[in-house]
Image (cartoon, rainbow, N blue to C red; front, side):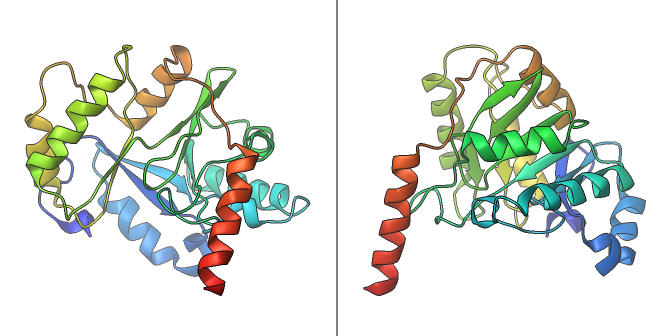
Length: 233
């Protein structure tokens, strides 16, 4: 992936930490921590102590898993957390948004975080509680798209979100070369600013310009029905 590619350390980059590696593969975590530059920022992931889909976890079990993840974040010195749920399919074919009830569980059981991020491809769940934001990805930087296409996409997102500051959370697929990402970002005008994720979350919490949005239960039911129809078809 991008960790060993040219360019790492030149710009702020956030990296997911699969926290259950602390007992599954501690040597791997030590490898990444020991090589990190000041521009490499680690975040807890993904939805729990490892990969989980929170909408698929029983309600009485989810708080236990979040508590476990919170303890690992303290152990690994992490203060931001990423959530992703693909239990209802991807953004295009399903629904990756989160209901308010689940979001409240994360806020209640992770009181020390500075913010949450959500999704993988673009998602639409946003909120702020006590200046702690939950911001979803607005763009997925695929290695399959050309630099020209990506630049056009980012500029279009800025146009259709005119209120400033516009908090554009960008998910860079790890197979992208960081020098390529830098070249893309250099093609943007001065209206854009690349900042570290911790600063991004603090600014988003202090001055949110996005609208609060949670999962629409009707859409969730429709997504489940469509998924079942595809499986049965």
